[in-house]
Every structure is written in C-alpha cells, then in structure tokens.
Image 1 (spheres, one colour):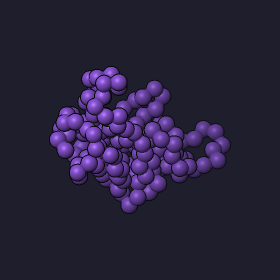
Image 2 (cartoon, helix red, strand yellow; image 1 turned 30 degrees about the horizontal axis):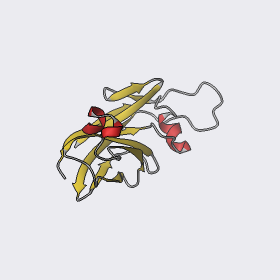
Image 3 (spheres, one colour; image 1 turned 180 degrees about the vertical axis):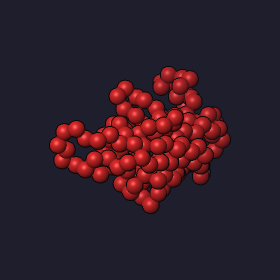
Image 4 (cartoon, one colour; image 1 turned 135 degrees about the vertical axis):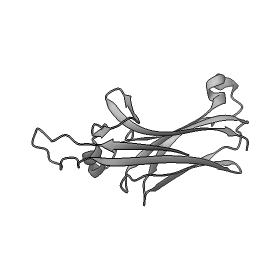
Length: 154
C-alpha cells in the first residue's frame, strides 16, 4: 500500500467569482491497495477527499510495455477508468481472465477527471490549490498520485 500526504492551500479570487473561494490549508491523503481474487483485480483505497470526488485510475501489465499490441496474449492488459469517493473509500474491479504472470503497475490520481463544482472550487479545476512534495505536475495541472507495482501470479 502506498500513501501520499499532500497539503493544499488556496489563493484568493481576484475576479468576481460565482463559486466560493477554495478553502484554506488542508492535508489530502490518497492510498491504493490492489488485491487479486480469482480472475479479478480489485483496486481499493482510502482518502480524506470529500464524497463525490472523482479519482482516475490506470492499470498496466508489463507485457503491454514489452510487446506490440498485436502480440499481446490478451487484449485487456491496460485499463483505465474512474472511481468516486464515498465515505473515505473508493474501489474498482478489473477482469484479469487472460493475464499472464508478470509485473503490474497501478496509478490512482486526483484531479485528472472532471470534478463536481464543490470539489473543483475547493482544490481548483486543475489542482491549482494543491501543494506539497508528492504533487506531480502534468502540463498546467497538479495531481496527487498513489501508485503500486506488484507481481501478478493469478
């Protein structure tokens, strides 16, 4: 399990904003704990983000990086999607029926996906209010990332 702690701080609005200004300094925690159950990969995690925050995930089997897609032993070796926070938790399930043994990387990020208005107001539409050592800058966006790499054995 990987845990990222981030401090967020807001800048005051300079133009007549329709939505409230982002809140003050706060800590954001995001964890991911992938587990397997038969032919399914479960992505479960915890966070202190508010209910309704949308997290983006991406799962990549090492074979997807080593071979061209025409030579993959299965067609689902890369997957991405979103999960919504509820009561400090989120989760997703992926089909792994044809996965070979090998290394798998899981990344969960916030705020890549479009967020509800109250979440965007609090953290910024592109994570502008996020600050800290565990922030990844992607173009003009700041994101919190929780990642894990593990050996898939079925």
